[in-house]
Length: 70
Image 1: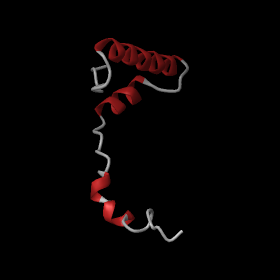
Image 2: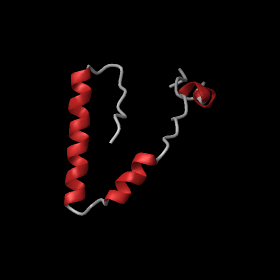
Image 3: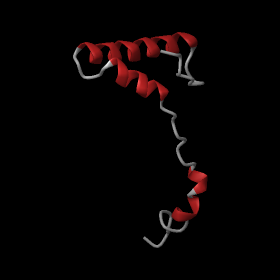
């Protein structure tokens, strides 16, 4: 599995620990029959789509959440 964790707030040691934990969980699921090697490869190959930026939808919330009438 490639190193896919790029969290700026974590140290290199914390990233290694997190990756090891993820790999252990995946290995356990494979051992328990919950995942196959093929499914793991398919998940690895998935392209993640970015989450919408709150600034892109801010106009939806303007005047509704911060209404001072109540």
